[in-house]
Image (cartoon, rainbow, N blue to C red):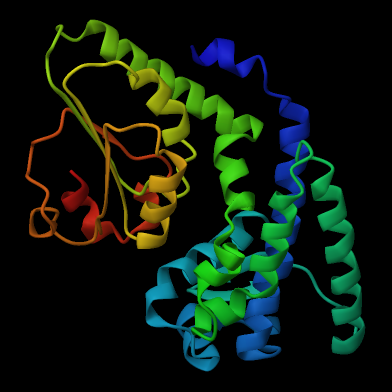
Length: 283
């Protein structure tokens, strides 16, 4: 299944997309750090100082650490004893550098669009989120309003559902589910719980595999009521699906979910997004 699905992937193009996105990542993170600490990054600054000076919300500490560490991995920053510093000197004056960076950012976004298989919503979403990264992490603006303006989810939805690497993983997931359905005993109940369903990108590939399956219950959940409401509209044709909110950082039983009562758990691109202490709840 995986080998067959992989034949449709244009790996050189996806690699070019990754490189372009990596360069944009460095620009957006550097903008955030400068917004929080000015030129402190030139001499080195730790994550907690960035959090404090920028008045970023405590719940984004883990995200900030991940953003900074990604810049280290990509070679844009160095980290010594927890202090981050630019790995390359910037010879321009601040005003000149800002102008250069803005122009370079636009060029990169145009380049990125060329790798997105005609889905302009993807670079548009990246630009919108990158430009407002500080506002989201400081609490000045709600991330949902930035990523999903007017409740539109086009950028994220096509990325997870229709874009080539999203289709690749979804085809594998659908194939696994198909095998489970084919090998189960006739009339044997099948209860499926999807956690962190989001825009339903993976769900859209799984539900067609379940049409006509007897004694079936599919429970779509997400921490946000916005996503569960949208999913209920999107998958209205599947009458075996139930919808509710579920926060994996809290005990599932306290939210109305019985322990060990599901035969299959679907968690597509979600477990990594929470704090490590919540993993036992996910199990």
